[in-house]
Image (cartoon, rainbow, N blue to C red; front, side):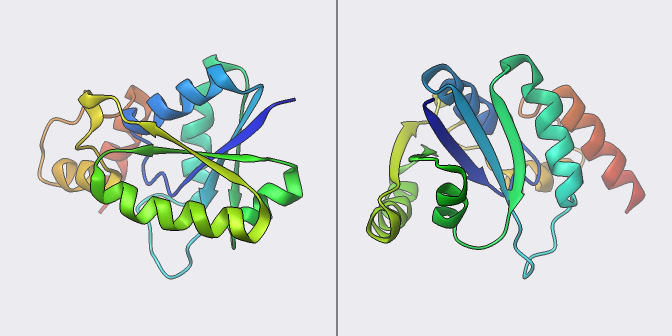
Length: 159
């Protein structure tokens, strides 16, 4: 089976993330979505909430598995026999950072990284930007799936 991983914090998952995951799901038999646990950062959504939202919005793809990870992504890949990482690139600045990571990952473990250019409609999109616009009452309905919009609005009302 051809397997790949799409890693990230997904706080929250956006339409840009979903575009990359869906495109990877057409190329691979199984796509693992690895939700990064970074204990030095306090996310808006907890890890279990992020996983549940991603599972809900990717359910129609049929070959996506969502789980969390802590530590090196290459260790996650080795433990699951995943030979490829799929990353979306929005801009040249993404490439500079991601190229270094890709070179480190292949050097550490032989895991390849495939770069997928982001759909131009999402080239500006980030979870941080979505949260900031939502906090100020901006319309983000075209940037996130409906379940994420609902969860985000609920979370922001609770603050």
